[in-house]
Image (cartoon, rainbow, N blue to C red):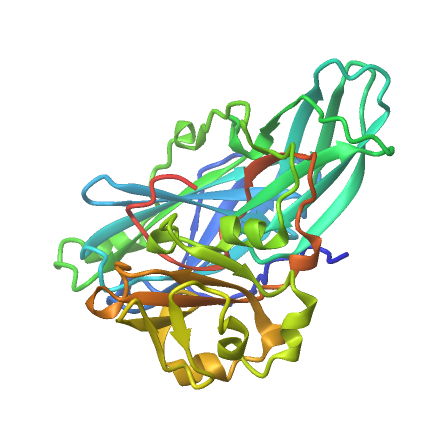
Length: 383
């Protein structure tokens, strides 16, 4: 079993502190500078100074960040608070509009928490919960269930979205009827708020003085009323590891629906082949392929992709079979191929494939923390 890795939190020694106007506690926001150019990185550290004992455990809290531009577009980030501090790096891509940006921070006392209830639970006693992240890391824990069917899961730390699955702890394959809500997505009153401004580009003279001043931050901005999360997958029949990998890691035009999915990780004999081209010979109808990668499909050429990036046949040939998870073969015409030909997409293993979720588990998608290094995307309105 792999354990979930903690986010890499960097203690940054940065200038320019602005404090929230709170009587019993305050946030200090530190930026590496106030004026940026496209392509720069914004380094942010937010420290909480507790003046009234409100925050019982400073290692188990969450910092919500809202970034707003002059056009009124907002995006939201969520970082864990470790020993009273949340920090990270935000890359500012060239595509961002120039102008003034406002960064607002609000401290939420709770850490990641899931509250759930099992309908018609009876005297079930406990269930097994399993968390599977996008990187393939996973963890599980036994969760106590109250007589009324309610339960709580607390303090799991993970980035981006993850899958949370449940099953009975005893040898019983009957599905569970569960509803859950994530407490990070519920409304709350922040313990402290603060704001800073920064500028991308060359600010006019009248703007420069305000970049060092605190920004009034309304507490209502951080109200995020959550709802009961829907079960996104109910597995009544088993799916292969390749099918689960395909659902989790394949995106965009590579989900054409007309492809042939070939599982390398489900075929023990695959490691006996010198490369994937030898393995594919005779396995896909209409595909003519040599061990060198020279290939045609129904008279058309074949384009190769590695983890959804176009590469040469030689690069594909050099990948050890033990590093390949799945191969997807797309008959012509494939949108991403040269001249409307066919395509072969090879996906490498991400770790944790052997532990993908088995059948008969009710599964939910839950939102975790924003990565501590991330590109700013103002088109992403919510987490």
